[in-house]
Length: 353
Image (cartoon, rainbow, N blue to C red):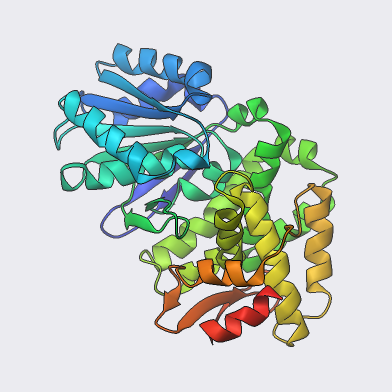
C-alpha cells in the first residue's frame, strides 16, 4: 500500500506493508546511493529491530553507525540533539550522507530535527515503530524537541525522503503504548473522515483495531497527507490536525514529559475543548459524549488530576498557535469536519475550566 505525499517541491511515498521492515535495506537502496548513515533509535527499539536493520543496510553497501538514546519523551531535548550532532560529526557525515529514524515519535522528531539542522540540513528517512508515529508524527515534515516551557517548542519544517510503515511491529508494543496512538486516529476521524469514525464505533476494542491495523493506519495517514499537501507550513487547514493538541500539549508539559503519553494528552485535550465549545454552542450538543464513548472503549483518559488552570494557562501562552494575544483553536462543527476558531488568550482561560 503506497500513499504519495505529492508536495510540489518535495514529494515522497509512505509505504504501509506488513513485513516491510524485513526488507528495509532494499527500500533504502531504492531511495539513496551508498553512503554513510546514522541510524537513530532508542534503547527499547534497538535490540528489537535496530541490529537487523543495520545488518540489512550494510548488505546493501551502506556504512552504518547507530546512535541509541534512553527511551522516552524526557530524551526529546537539546542535550540529546547535541550528542547526536556530535555523533554525526565524529563519524564524518557530510551533506551527501543521511539519517534514518527507527522508533516512535521521540526517535522520529529527534532524528529529523538533528538531520534538518546538521550542516544546515541532510536527508533523512522515517521508519516509525509506534502507532502514534505511524499515523501522525512521521508524516508531514514537522520536526521538534521540547523545552522547559512547551512541547515541540524548538523545531523545523523538513520533509523525509520516504516513510516505511510495518504494521507487524505494533504487536510488540505494550497495551498502553498501542492505545495512546488510537487517540490520534480518533482525532483524524473527527476532523476529516466520517467513515473512519463509523468504523471506530463498530469495532469492539483495541485488539480488533490491531487486527485491522493497515486500514486504520492508511485512513489516518491519508487524512494527514491531504492536509499537509494543502498547507505544508501550518498556516491554514493543516492546523485542523491540532484538534485537542493545544490543551493536550499543556497537559504533557505540566505532568512532566513522559508521564502522560502524547495520544493520552490529545484525548484529554479533545474532551476538554469539546465540552466547553459545546456549552458555548460552538459544537453540536451530545458530541462530547460520543467522543467519550469511543475513548472509553480504548481505555484512553478523559481528564487529568490535579487540574491546575493557572499552570496550564501559563504553559499555553507559549503554544506555537499563539499569535500575539490571540490563539487559533480547532473545533469540530460536525463529525468529519473541522474549523479554526481564533480567540484571545484571555478567552482561552474559559476552555480550561
